Length: 184
Image: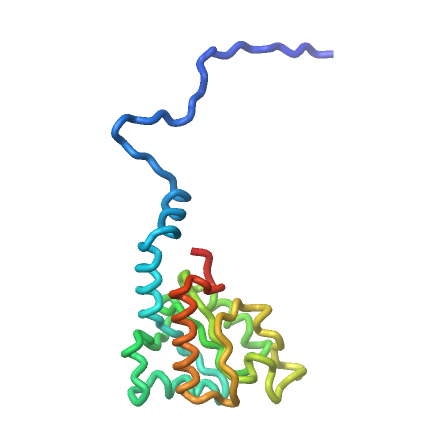
């Protein structure tokens, strides 16, 4: 059998980072904990709730109501709710209407391209429960198992006022730090 040789190392102790007098060092976890416990998090959430940009990807008849909500008559700009065409500029995805199995991979890709923090609103009976397409061969059921839905807006199709109310509820969730879409 072969012999095992022990090698001697220096007798110096490896110490963690030494404290430097007059210098405060920190970690990213400490900064994150600080922001969660102070008024700074409230300020950040105020900015987030007042600048919700939703991605326009209308599906079905609910999509027409979503487009109408983004037009001048309802003036969602006064709430900081602005429609965007790019997922890289949006922080709210509205699943408006039915989602087919063919469209689901593209919808997931759009969700992955959105920057965090991001939120999801399920608008209409088709997106919530399948609506008249319940148990259809081509329609995705239980969309809440695939996306972290923050607000459900029932109706067939829900009126633009209901979508605005859904945005107000989402703003309240963000203000109260109870959103499910992110881990910030």
